[in-house]
Image (cartoon, rainbow, N blue to C red; front, side):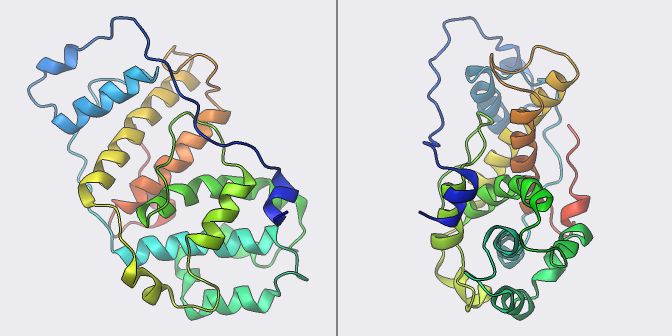
Length: 253
């Protein structure tokens, strides 16, 4: 059994299928002249899944794709942090992680709080409990390099899924990330922009629900499940926010 299964447990993490609701969904946005086809498609997807974002959200947000190596480095910065806290020293000596970080300049892609994790005992329970949100950040970044699409239900990732990403969908600790990306078939710019815009709309519905509005599906927890949407949207928006740091990524809705 993998270390992540031991620490977080394992479960069937397939996104539950939603039955199409037999109700009339407002299509008033079909006649809005400034709305893009991409936004109309994403609003359809949101409403069909039970989310109700504001239809007047702007569509021209000045998104610019950042360099592929920066996206890869952010994914691997998360990998290093997760391994630091989730894998015991006897299974993975700290020098292997620290050398990987240094050889690939990954500290340049960590926040100050994340850098401080590397000074934290590797069995620190409080830090381990907090690192779970990095799992959600990792999924869209890994999807960009060929992993499966991030789900929209708000269901949190299981430990075995994160272990799969770190073991099979990222660079090895003795490797070069710059070399690793050379043979990767990345997601197209159009598909990335579509996915980021979808999560932008979902995030708007989540934020409204957190303020008390009925804008998310039945059974969706605006805080817990909403946090998952928030973290996945953060990674997607970071990927299309050229020259913007992780902590300065604009998550306004």
